[in-house]
Length: 290
Image (cartoon, rainbow, N blue to C red; front, side, top):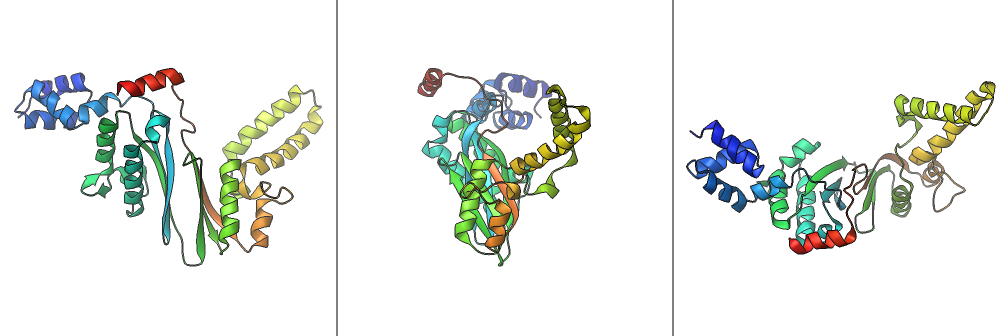
């Protein structure tokens, strides 16, 4: 029976998880020194030490298999690593593994087994082998029926990916709208999906903005309503002007082509993550040392 104090000591030295430390001590008959080597040999200590670093680079990827499609974001610390063969192989393995699974949440996805290993463990091994923190940030899977179609677009080699689900069949127009989605950054599909908190917050901002412009209080409300309509055109995909034909909104393009857009997802690498500020020279230097 391994003493709890030894587990605590090993954890403080290596930064590895409690269960990993216990297993290492079990495997080495309670020797802390040998357990450190065991953790290093299995890539766990090296990966754990990188756990608090920021992984805000990486790639997104889309995969489609008949009536199921998936888009994922796998992060690394630098864009150098996101281009190397080991990272790309890991990205493909994880994407295909999730596509073949029934996982819907990140927690479920990390437990999916691929070739006898959980995705969580594949990422740990990848972190140790590649030398940077690797993180599966998110994924989204969709299924369709025979009367629907997928449209997908990947921009800049996977810096941005969009996946859309339509009722109907027009691959050319679907691809164009997928490209539009990558460029226009919609937050919602349509006005009905915009939550009241988002709108209330925007109305308050617009109201204060109008008052600060010196507008009379009796016309501020009408101004806010007008600006909210404009706001809907910015954040709702079907209300946006089509980038290929700015005389039409997306909803008009859909109607003209007998399409109904039911779902969309847009992933952009690192969006919303506060990145560490590092110079290009320092970034290269870090890679040389690994």
